[in-house]
Every structure is written in C-alpha cells, then in structure tokens.
Image (cartoon, rainbow, N blue to C red):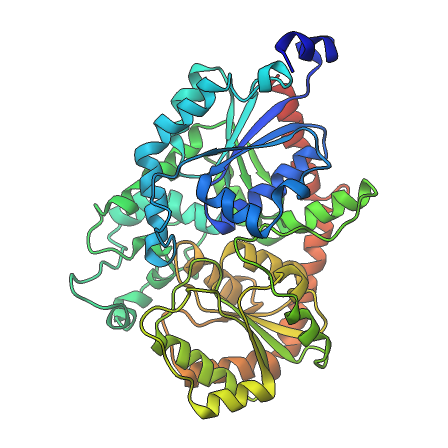
Amino acid sequence: MSRETAMDHHQTAGELPPHVLIFPLPMQGHINSMLKLAELLCLSDIHVSMLISDYSHSRLRRHASIESRFSRYPGFRVATMTDGLPDDHPRAGERSMDIVMSLVRVGGTEFRRVMETTDALSDGGARRRVSCLIMDGVFSFAVPVVEEMGIPFLYFRTISACAFWANFCFKEVIEAGEIPLKGKDEDKYAYWKREDFDLPVTSVPGMEGYLRRRDLPAFCRVNDVNNPVFQTIITESKRTARSNGLILNSFEDLEGPILDQIRNHIPNLYPIGPIHTHLQARLVSKKTELPLPSSSFWEEDRSSITWLNNQPTKSVIYVSFGSITLLTRSEVFEFWYGLVNSGHRFLWVMRPDSITGEEYSVPEELDTGTKERGYLVGWVPQNEVLAHPSVGAFFTHSGWNSTMESVAAGVPMICWPYFADQTINSRFVSDVWKVGLDMKDSCDRVIVEKMVREVMEDKRDEFSERGVRFAELAKKAVSEGGSSYSSLNRLIDFIKSSV
C-alpha cells in the first residue's frame, strides 16, 4: 500500500492509533511476559510492533505459532534484528548472559538501523510511526535513538519488584561491603558453604529484616565487583529512573512495600500483574475467552496433561527448572533420588539440552521408581499444568514467570534458584509470603526428600491455605477496579497521550 493510499484509507494520520514498539531481551522468560503485554495493548486498539532477535523469532515460529496467535490483531507486527551471536551459541546456563553483553555491543547500531530504514516501523504510512517504546531492562543503547526521534520510552522489567529493587541498590550494597566475593578458584559448592553467606544485608531499604548475602541476586556472585556483567546490571538498573515509567509483572498485595520503595525513585510505576491472569481476565471481558496461547521456544508435550488426568487430586509434585538452567549429571541424580525416595508422584520437565556432560545410564532403582510414580517430559504447557487439580506443589528454579504463575494458581513451591533474580524470589517465597520452602545453595537428595515430604505432607495445609489467599488477591488485582487493572488503564492512557 502506498503512503498516499494509506492516508486516504485512514483519512488523516491524526486518526491512526498509537503505535508501541515492544523490545524484549531475547530470552524465553522475557519474551513470554512481553508477548502478553503486547496482546493486552492490542485488546485496547493500540498498534504494536515486537522487536525480537532472528534466533528467538525462528524458535517462536517453530513452536508457538506466533503469526496465527496474533492474526486476530491486524495492528500487530514482528520486526527482527540480530542478537550478535552465532546460531549455534547455546544461549543457556551461565552463557545466557552472553546475549546481554552481545546486545550491549551491537544493539545500538542494530536498533538505529531498524528505526531509520523503516521510518520508525510505519509500514509506508499504513501505521503511525512508533509513538512509544517499551523496552527491557538492559537496553539503554536504544535511548539516544528514541530521544532524537522524540519518542517517549518506558521500561518493562520482567523480574520481581524485590529483585529489581535489590539490583537498583547494588551500588550501596558494594559500598557497605556486603557482597560475598568469590575466591578466584573457589567452586560453587565450597562458596555455598561459606559462613559469611548467612550474614544480613542492611543496605537494601525495606529488606533489612530478612535479606541475607546468599539471597542477593546471583549477579553479585563474582570474584571482583568490577566484573563487566555485574557493572552492566548496576548501570542499567540506575538508568531505569530516567525513563517515563516502569512496568512490572507484580501486584500491590504481593509486593506493596517494595513497590513503595521503588516509587521514591521512579514515581511513574505500573504494576500490572500477574500478567497471564490479567490477559485472561481482559479476554473474558472482551468475550474472546481462549486458552492462553504458547510463547514457547520448545514443543509442548500434551501427554503430560493426559498423565496428570490419571493421578489423584494434589498428589503430584511438578518439577521444572525453566528455560536456561543447566544441570550436571550429579545434580540430576541428587534431585532424582530425592524425588523417588520421597514416595510421591512427580512430573519432571527435563528440557532438551539441559544436562551437561557425557551420556549417563539411569540406575535401576530410579528407573523403577519413575515407572511407578513419575513421568519425564521435555517441555509442558506450564499454566495448564499448575492449574491441574492433580498438582500439589511446584519444585521450581524460581524464575519470576514461574513464581507468579504458581502464586496465581495457589500452588506451594520448593525453590532451587539457579540464576539472576531467582535467589531473591526464593527468599520472598519462603520467608516473606511463606508459600513454600527455599532450597538454595544445596543439592542433596536427603534435603530434596525432606522438602518434598514437608510441602506435600507436613506443611501442606498451611502452605495451601496461604497459597489460596494469594491466588484470591491476584485475581482481585486484575479484576475491574483492582490495583493492577487500574495500573494497566493508566499505562494505556499514557500511551494514548503520547501521540
């Protein structure tokens, strides 16, 4: 369509809807939340472009049918750019941070190229030029470009408010000498056992009563505070305060005191979570209730649901360590023995390529115990699994999407955090919200067995009762008049006012 035809079709450019560009970090958990935000904005008649890496786009096309998912929203588009890494890069485990560091290097040039060669993604005049940018937390390289173009920008941090706030305070934590630096050749198991790990952290306002050094986000686990990844997180977190606002996948009844701390620095705060239940609620109100579509980088195995259908109510512990965790063979066996020895049924997601090292054979007792009570699968439709009546608890890596999905489903957790914000999420689950147990910095079959029994037997009623309460509060937050519902409306008003 020529620019003139497009203008005739819409009468005037002034009548075109606002056009938001959403720019996530190209990792599964970040894209998952950002696609839900994209759909929430599409439901409010806003045009949305999603800028993702070529690698992520190919995974989404293969396993999540992104085009068919958004086909009912004519105002939605996908744009792509390189993340600067070769196609065969694993993009998992510790090396997932290579994505961040690569984008810090190439992102500014690539982002400018996308914006300048497409006239700010305007489809030759069929759409307004981008009128607002919503970007992930480490993308300040985009700021000079949008400032030159006069485009307001917001951040959407897809981590918890508590983890963001700790990141925001890293400079103060360093000045207080509260970072537990790692010895040059110290392996992670020796590091975990250090006594100074249990000292309190006093330099993160609002968390003085329960935060320990071992709970600090895993970016702090460095040999030297000048570590480039750590310094990037410090710099980028502080830069969030220069934006037009901050969107979080959280809600007032869950993280209110921490949200108030953040408001002291970033008054324009939009807590709109849990984003998956919020999207479901808005779809229902538009009379377009559908199962939430997949945002998965892997094929979801539906046989997991068939297996759950044949299990008693609340009898299964669901086990998944997310999209980037890498386990050693030894860690896999510690978890596996703990699960089998607990005597409880389990559904375990073993993501393809999630185990490092050589091939291994499964001991007979594990094979027998799994055939009797377990089911192993590559990837599952997680929301559906957590909502299933057979699931009694979630053994999780404490990624924020997984934590929020568990909170919204009222399912108690055992937390084994692996990376980034997960160490702080697990502390809040166990010691602040009291809806689960924190198993961080331990990988021992005896502890796994004990914790499974505790969450499925001894403390089952106590955790379930609190879990149900938080699930009700989550539902209230996204219902009409709720805190997250009102926050999303304020965000939509801001976006509409930006034109």
